[in-house]
Length: 214
Image 1 (cartoon, one colour):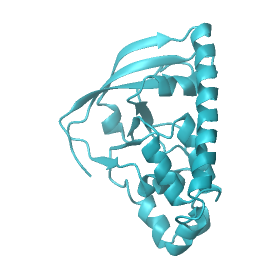
Image 2 (cartoon, one colour):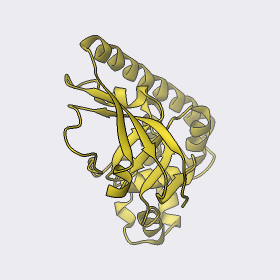
Image 3 (tube, helix red, strand yellow):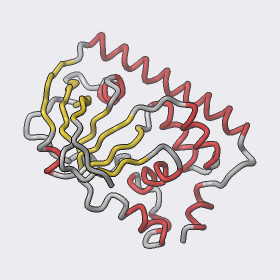
């Protein structure tokens, strides 16, 4: 858990625009839980909202001063934290491994971690579904150039966010982003296939990791 005096520029995609104060009110089962999600890569949040006719992209200034921050490196812990927040650990509720990730961000104002972009989303699902091992997953993480996401978990963190710019997407922009998102997913599928074949005998599967952590 770290603190920082840094100010960063980030991006947020919205289905219909921000009309009230910024708040940690995303849906429950996001990568790092309920919060206000921002990314370092402008394109990533755009692909999440490009199906909505009133979608907008925001450029934000975020002051990290005096915030308690959990910075999660790309690796197995990152994947298991995502698994917990997506509800993939319910079968081992109250075990040691479940409790570890349930409490990992306790007391934090913000989490910084790699984003499960269009390509990585496919690979993660294959890991959670028992199709690839942790070794294949980690090899995928190192092969993909993942951007980072910053997730404001508390009111204090949200108060440190300022909107610098707001842009509404045109229909042409949204259509191009839809095509890009689809293409990225197919790239992820192709990569997962290659990695699955290469590392199918190496490492542990998701259910084996959960069982060992009980």
